[in-house]
Length: 236
Ligand SMILES: CC(C)NC(=O)[C@H](Cc1c[nH]c2ccccc12)NC(=O)[C@H](CCCC/N=C(/NCCC(=O)O)S[C@H]1O[C@H](COP(=O)(O)OP(=O)(O)OC[C@H]2O[C@@H](n3cnc4c(N)ncnc43)[C@H](O)[C@@H]2O)[C@@H](O)[C@H]1O)NC(=O)OCc1ccccc1
Image (cartoon, rainbow, N blue to C red; front, side, top):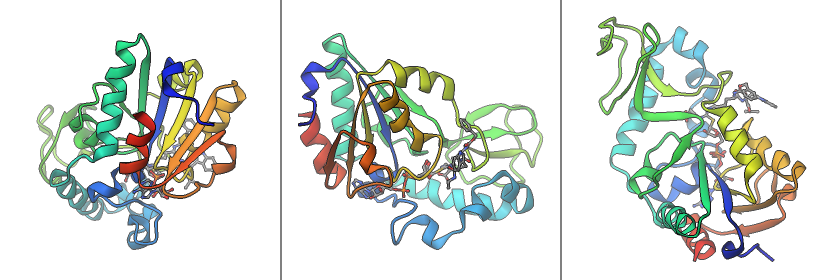
């Protein structure tokens, strides 16, 4: 029986592409997902960017344009309500997402930890500056801070790169009363290892997904269905 929210103080939620699927952003590994049409090793690695920056920019420019015309859905809005609801009761929600979209923030979530970066930010590999970026990126685009060209890249974490804020994320995970994974296949590390880390520390675990993920057996509780229905039902 799923732990009723009213008894839980600290909740750690990990979201993945599945929570944004019904907002039209597609997922990675589903049959018509991004990786069925694009090769991640040719587009989402530092080597790919060094070798063919134009192709990598075109890929992320396409996703950025899609994002700018997308809207949060009922699952994003339910988590924003949960955040304020828990805070009112002296509890807390730690919302960690693998998603590079800004739909959690646009739904009203105040604190969102993007462990794989943000599509609406660019980073200069010459001066290290990170800045908001809504336009298409290109190798010609000069860095607004150091004025050098050729150094701007999407502020996202590629395969083989260290996730962002990982120490703070692990600390919050181990302080939680409940770990909930929403809309993720559990196929990419270190995020895919969070459930076993939580179990190892006696933290209750729950999966909310369209179908069983690669780690489904590791979860104490499981709820299956479209996020826009399953998440509000769980929060209410
Ligand atoms: C392929 C995999 C085996 N490779 C890795 O895991 C690698 C290597 C690796 C490290 N440790 C390992 C251990 C074992 C094996 C390999 C490794 N990991 C790394 O390189 C990571 C960096 C990986 C980050 C790569 N960047 C992404 N994204 C950003 C860019 C971009 O977006 O382009 S990964 C990307 O795929 C990942 C998985 O995607 P999901 O979000 O889960 O989406 P997916 O499509 O797979 O699944 C969707 C799910 O939703 C469900 N769904 C669909 N529709 C709905 C719906 N409507 N409602 C509800 N659910 C729904 C579906 O059923 C499905 O289950 C996400 O993280 C996502 O961000 N870096 C690192 O490890 O650094 C060192 C380190 C080690 C320890 C501690 C610190 C550092």
